[in-house]
Length: 255
Length: 300
Image 1 (cartoon, each protein chain N blue to C red):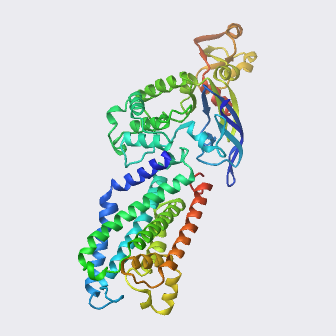
Image 2: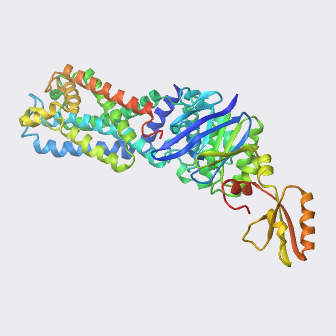
């Protein structure tokens, strides 16, 4: 257990020491999204009844920050360690694959939630809380934030194990994570999409993370939050099993 | 119980066979040398012992614990100083050592960390970021990281490559003390004089196979013997001495001798042939001679 705690602490300390890059920068990016999209579209678009477009954007931006930063934490830590060679300090000790998985994913959750909380705290100043969030259900917010961060932390772990150079990791991020995030309904409801893209979105697990998360804020969503919870949970179990299998086999780590 | 038991280890990388049936037994408390030219398979073998790579076949145990099936027990008993100068740029020396201790499941022990740092002359760098250290200092931290969990078996993979004399002396003093306290030391190095001075037993690897395994003294005696080096003038070398002559490119005529009483017959033959001896040296063979001879090169 001390081994797990130490690796978890090290992963937290690692991103905390460069908080400007890992926490402040993504918060600023989210504010820019809110300002640009919110001010341009607020008077023209209304997705949910009694919810302004700017307020609609906030949960999407918070979740997007949670997901992207959870992914970045595990993946960047692993790829940096692999390339600089200091991964050996993790591989030599008697850390089990469970400890490795737990520490990397939990640290990713912490970073994702820290950035997400930061984005939320900064962006709520742009909307009227009482009129927009009167139907909020915080438990759903917490569940989907945790699951979303855990999924992307696990994906980051898988990407970090698989990638052998920064270029490969960037490809994973740019061609899988970014499109899946942007096509998940961060900026819109999938009901506003043409039939083809609507169908495509239903196969995107990121959509269920954001939709369920958004339900926690407004009590309204595109699909039943229980259905989203089931899909997101199943996706996490699948990914976690795959990541644990990679760690256990030593794939691209012990060869 | 052997400190390290290696049984018929094979490792293939696609078509390349890096290790071809290596078997070794390193006893507790030994100072063991693992020598060989670049590409012989030393680092591959150490990596298998440390669990950094998996063998294609064969078994390795550390202090009786299999490195695959009982890897947690095996790894907790092993400290490895890697060949590459690697470090984590986010942390200070003290943070690095605290974390390494924690990875081995041990509670924070600043007194022990301070002692290791003092022994390796790192005390005044304790709160310095790893990035700011010189190469020699980084090497010291690598040694400290390998020792922080007090492993009974310590593997040093070319620990003195590219480091100054001061660090070498500090390091060997410290490692020697650990060995006298009962720690098993396994050393790979290209500095053969270090291996000769420190190691009680040596294995030589060539192309993934053990080509020599014996005590250092036995290797020195068995393979090379001594050399009689003469600078001659006058008549040509008598044919009777060609059998004991060692071919060389130097200006000296060199003869292999196993015992000192073999010198006089050679000198007598030279006098009979009217050869004039301008210079005479008797040199003890060293590990480099043994190494070159075993690896198939010319003996000096």
